[in-house]
Each structure stands twice: as structure tokens, then as C-alpha cells.
Length: 297
Image (tube, rainbow, N blue to C red; front, side):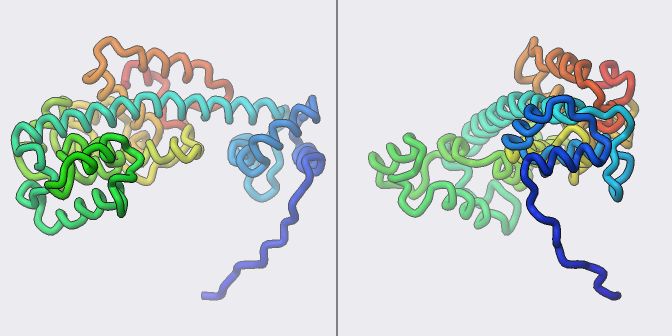
């Protein structure tokens, strides 16, 4: 197959040139200085990802009639607020799952359950220890976590701190993998606490890890096609549309489920509703939200 690639020749543009290019493509810019301010501190390329939703096609980059610079800016601001709202909930979910896994496993298997290969699927324990070694660093007495420094300054054995300390150092992704690799009854008991089948919890933790990483790296999320499709419980399959299961709607539904369990009376769903209702020109369908999403979520 012939290589149809071509050399990249696009030049860097000044702020004035960036505004002029947007105007040539049909964008209305009422205040050029204001537009240059946002282009300077957000970036033409980042805003360009939001501008695409107001363009007729990806070849000409021409904007739809009546499109204003503020339409693009408002979509960017909506997406940023959305990431902040998701991050707020994801932090609480990560802390809650870590705490419950640590408590349940330590009571069932002892303080050093993470260090026993018998508690995990065959062949994965070296990977777990590798992740632990990575976060502890070559000299744990210089670890950024004060409690890790204290453990190694005070105790000469065992080689690793108790599991409740280690869990505090591990990432959301590591938590997801550890749960996936954990054997038998512990997986089931943890999942029951969150009112889920253990296979669904495994899938959801993986999905939320991806969601968290998107938010943490400030990537666009409102219209994203998620590369991971979470398992859907049977009782949710009729109310969560198939076409929404790799979209923002699924992430919000999963987060709402966790928040209902870990924070009775949480106002997170109401905060989400206020944000979605004030979304401006962002179409619900691009987020995977059906028109009756409040009843379905």
C-alpha cells in the first residue's frame, strides 16, 4: 500500500494571525483583544478541539452561520467544569474503595495481605510487588509520604509496611488491578458492599481509572468516545442506552451509583443536573445523554 503521507508545513501563527484565520473561516469575533487573551492563555490548538463542533466539515474548517468566539469559549468552560465535577467525585470514590478493600482484606488475611501470593491470581504477584517498589522508591526513608518515611525510620522488618499504608500510596489504576487480581471471597464481599456483582465492580474500577486519567490530563471529556466500555448490570440495561455506554453518560451513571453508596444524601447528582442544564450549545446526544436522562441516570 503506497505511503500517502505528506510533509508537515504549517507555520506557527501570531495571536493576530490566529484571530484573522478564525475570521476567514467565518467565526464572528466581536472583541479581538479578548479573543487574543484566551488564545494566549488557553492555546489555539486546545480551543481548536472545541471549535470543531461548530465547523461544517473537517476539510474547509468553515464555521456554521452565526457562530461566535464565545460559543467555543463557553464549550471549553463547560468541559472544564465537567472535569472538575467528575474529579471531585472520583477522588471520593478512590478513597472509599481503597479504605474498604484495605479494611476487609486486612481483617480477613492480616496486615500484610498484599505481600502474600496466595491472595492473588497465579503469576501476578511479582507485578504487584513491582508497583509497590516503584512507589516506595530506591530509598523509602526519602519517600514523599511522611508515614512511609516514619515506618522505615522506626522498623527494621518486614521489608514492606502494612497493607493499609501501602494502599494509600498506590494509584487508582493500581487499585483497579489489585482488585482484579484478588481471589475469591474478598472480591465478592467488597463488591457486595458497593451493591455490585464482582465482575461489574472490576469493570467499573477500570473504567473510572480511565475517566480519572482523562480528567487529570485536562483532556476533552464532554463528547469523548471512551476507549473502554463498562459492564452494565442487568437492571440497568434497559435504562442505559447501548449507544451511551462508552460516553459521558455511562461515567456519570457509574459515579452516581458510587456516590449514593458512600455519601448518603450526596448532592453530586443535583450539581451534575445544574451543569448539564446550563451547557449552552453542547448537544446532549454528543455526551450520550438521552432526552430523559434525569429519569434514566
